[in-house]
View 1 (tube, rainbow, N blue to C red):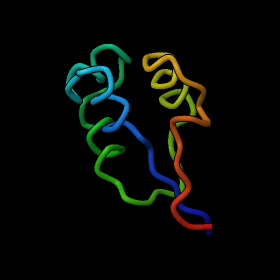
View 2: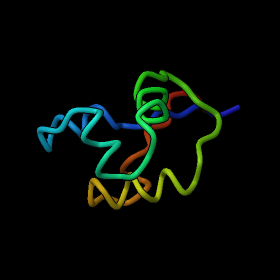
View 3: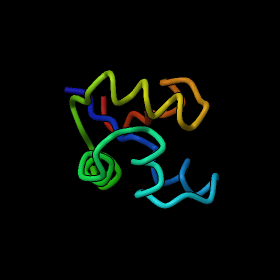
Length: 70
């Protein structure tokens, strides 16, 4: 099963934002952001959250995701 991680921490650092700021800007609960940011390998994620994060960071969803295991 393929695992992926979200590049939330890296993208937030590039913008100079904290994870709390990302949560506010994206309109996603902080607990969800921290869960996604801390995970080293996930199999699923909320598609709406991915869309909001991509829009917030002004990147494609593909740029938000990093495959860690196929």
